[in-house]
Image (cartoon, rainbow over all chains, first blue to last red; front, side, top):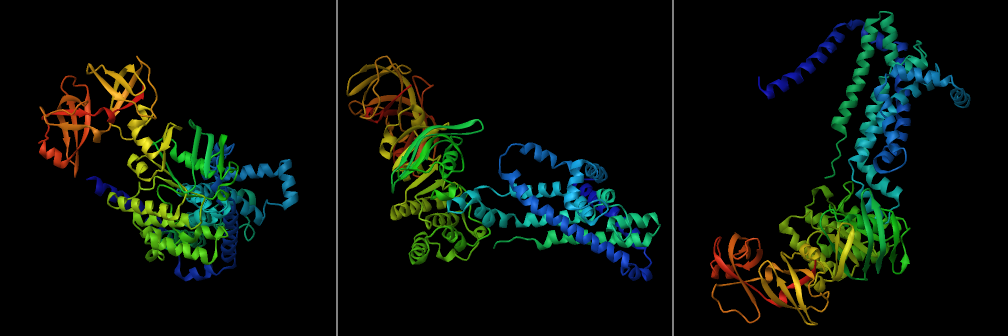
Length: 257
Length: 364
């Protein structure tokens, strides 16, 4: 077997594994019950809750990630190396551990003070958003930083030499050029928020019709042996995930010609 | 007028040291130096993108050292032009106008004039990604000039342009600078380009300006062998001064056991008897004559063998090895007609003629 056929066969093997899982999932469904499950109040609640929390968490992550990514990419400041390293933390510790850290933090004086000012996070919608935000923000900042890294700083230098203030130079040159990467970062962050389970379960619990996001709902339904309901939820998550990838692949072409 | 007074700046291990530079209004000053000399760093310092550790940047006598880059009125055209890819050519050209008060009819006339001069009117609706290197360069120049800058700073302006287009764009830029009388700073590693554009030239090596002067002076009288070599002087040899009078220096070219009397050039450093020095002669000023050809009085002749003969177009280059000391190598530019007449080929014996007034002396 030569290198070309080995490489192609490996690619198809990976695809075959995923397809087998998908076919198994679809085969487990009873077509007559699909509509009933999809229109059930509980599933609609889970889907809307997941979307609301993921959109909000992604929005907050992006609002912080654009300036933070810019600072890490372009500016030199004290503690940059530490910030850069700490951003990797959510990528290397499990979300459950992250959730546990949050719970411990909320039991400290600072955590109690914070909750007194901003309201409770534990078992609340805000807790879901916080869990999703914290497990995603590091990755989001890293992706946005990567986008800025790919755009030479000289564009802004030229803009400033033509009279633009640093902010005007950024908003008229680097930001529009980075738009594709920033939207891609938002889409991936959104998909990651939507699938977040560990930290959400630790902070907001796994309570039906309260903190039941799609991944938590999958977990609850597995516990009650509701295989069909679980399969539908997985398909919904898959559909959202694949849509995001398709948007990235086909709808974000940035052709200036 | 733009002036740098004893500017020092640091970036990691690299530093600019005590850079003095004066660019008179309407003049073109070229800084020439090898890659890594700090030319781009100097432009960035001038633009305000780098902090200076000491010294002053002055624009028409007022100190702009602490001014933000957008207030300095120094329009920058980097090596790769940096046209904004998210804007059309027209939007690129008009970019700077939204930040300054130069609106109105006069500006419109300036845009039209520039567009006509640079032949870019037909490109206005195009995107930068579709332009050739030469077109990008012309648009970048228009974009910089519409803001009526105090200084136009060009960083290696021709490095991204095809060889075939380069000469046309060079001439166009030269005419443009003369037409608009724009005060300009060009940094380049190409000494031909430096002599073509510079009213004044500076040589920069390792973060320091080692010599500044008008074009003619820099061409004929570089102060050091290093400067001479960088400005295209190919034939530089060691020697020693043995007799010095106000008009002449007698040098001992000890590698050839020959003494030569060289006239002193007015701006050259005075030498002392016994002082080690370098002498140099440009490759286009070394003559090749037929062996046995009658010598002109005062010229010095050396027999040599042609080691390599590189044919180009109209002018060729030959590398000649002195027969009595094969360590001494001359590089000589020779016109095609002369090369044919002398039947130059590799291995051929030739005679090299050095005219003393074409020889320049540098301290060791």
